[in-house]
Image (cartoon, rainbow, N blue to C red):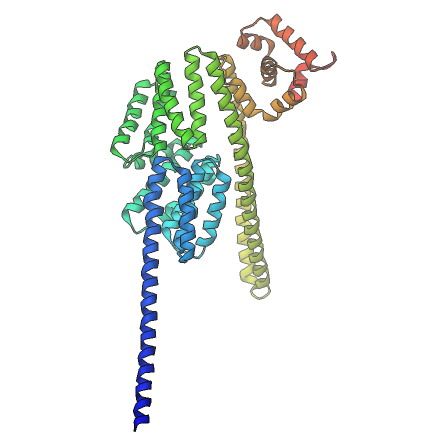
Length: 488
């Protein structure tokens, strides 16, 4: 009897011990679940609220440091959305800093992770950031395609406030892309939509158009409206720099060069601090213009030199990235063609069994392709005409700069004829700036009379300068000098 009782007691003890273990593990799981939920909330707050504050303050390096930490924290708790959003947030600020190659790499990582994720908010954010990168690289048509995809996903975002915020941002960047393409009907249409929640750059862009019509009062009206937004909205540090730069430009137009410099140097201080190099470039050009108005040649040349160096650097970086983007586009096109070919094989295989139907389909496909080919030929003709128009426009622009003795003439010529400029300067290092200017005039096929008129010298002086330049270039007397320059 005692043995039976002992066994019963031991069995009850074991059963109670097992129950305690189960309860302990359940409690432990609940603790881990609560901790994970707490971590997710913290990551979301960092990636949305703190991210917005850091961007507003222009602390882009701070964003990168924070987002890397958030990505690592997301990996530890397997929070996929945190990892993806972290990559896109980093890509966003890298694009603002003109570090497009790195930005696109982070977007590729996010795109791979998003392939099996139907998150409209993240997909809209991803394609929106792709569009911004293509925009800053000058691939405006490609950027519009990305913005259109972003818009499709943005319109499906459930949170109304987030949906409207994303849609407005997409419209704002699309507007800028259309303006660069000269599609003004589209610009005006989107501007109307953007007016529901305007940002400073919208009004600044409109002001820029009024400058072209020499309507300074209207330009000032819109710049003041941009400035008013600084007090009514939470505008980022970059937005404040843009407004300051706009006031600088306005004062240049009004010939208040001293005031213009105050605004422009303050704007430059902000953009240099936040490493917004493309904005630095705009400021350098305007500062040089202000110093020109003050007849301060040394300072004018100093800032023109800064402009030229930064412009060369940004163009070199952009060219490398654009080549990468184009290679990717060609790869995508090749993959699409392979898929098309595979589909064609299936169709050909089906011909054996359903000859009548397939013959009809082939005939229809043939007609469609013929139309497509005709459309492509027409498109090539249009592109050729567009290229010719741009070349004519470029020639007119350079001629205008030459006629007005604009100091940016050589910088613009160098941008448009880099191979010619670099070949001469590297092969003939004894050439002066004046020599290169004369070469530029000849390259543009200006006559001696035109060169004399644009350079404010006599015809005899032009001939003398050509003779001295011929000697510097070691050209024999039987070589047609003008023809030699045009062929190089």
